[in-house]
Image (cartoon, rainbow, N blue to C red; front, side, top):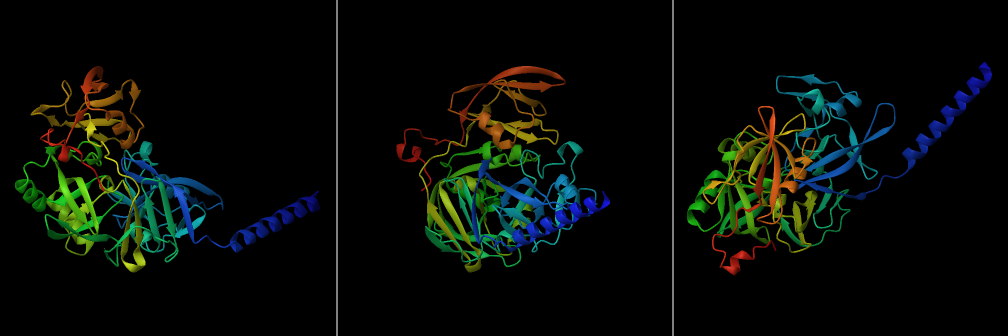
Length: 420
């Protein structure tokens, strides 16, 4: 019996060793393309992580080229067996060596430390409330590859430098050598600015100074107060006071974009963003302005490619005018109500109320993108909101409004806003 058990154990060891050798001998793909999901305009893909026992586990990864820092969830850090140390606001750990995307090994060696958000046990499997992802892929990692984000085709491609054959109009860009952050030489009102390229952001931002200057020069441009729709980024306390404006035209490198919605960058955050960019900048363009394009990034040659994939006006701001905060327990708190036509766009609702359901569909456990899909639709469409206040639930009928619409509906040349 002992001999048989020993023989079986030895045989299994040989087979496992041979399988491992065969696996390691297989050449790594130089380029892979995987489906992407757009969630609140954020690019989310599947990735695999290698566990200490030799197996792999699939996780959701957020393509975050506007952020040089690596974030992982506490759950992922624990299953990887990383040494976690915590402070008052967040935790940290040595990063894993790599992740796998579509069978291709993506090295994380450029990252010195992984940030782990300090969250409750119930939210241990997310890096940010309202986002279904357990790891981000930051600019410090992406800069070592060729990258293509195909918004119309819902596909993400990554490859070794020189492996992708980019199409579209190309533009020389500024790539920060340390962080991989990208700045695109641009023009607004015939004046030159650098604007960041950030497909990880759901909305575009301008410095407060430039925002106010343009708003003063163009009172006819639609504007409002309150971070609704894709501008409702994370549910920060000051989002009800954010100013939004729909710009008529922006030249972004060689591409002309129309009807671009931008938020004013709070001064302290703008200063932080500019310091991290490492070069003078006036803001950034987020995914909301680029959804019609395939965006190629040839980091090695500091070149971006813009290929038009479709011409479509996304009704991102035809929504119910709530400003929300996703909570760690999966719920959603109403931070504020945007005005429409000089009065609150939703009656009977107060800041601090909990949004429980939309048309009978519970919102708890949903992502920000999923909730905003529920709150959107054709202007004038009624939605039944279930709201909770002080432990009691009640229903409110709210209408979808056409926020940031043209001030003069009879001006058909402006009413046909499009991105092309």
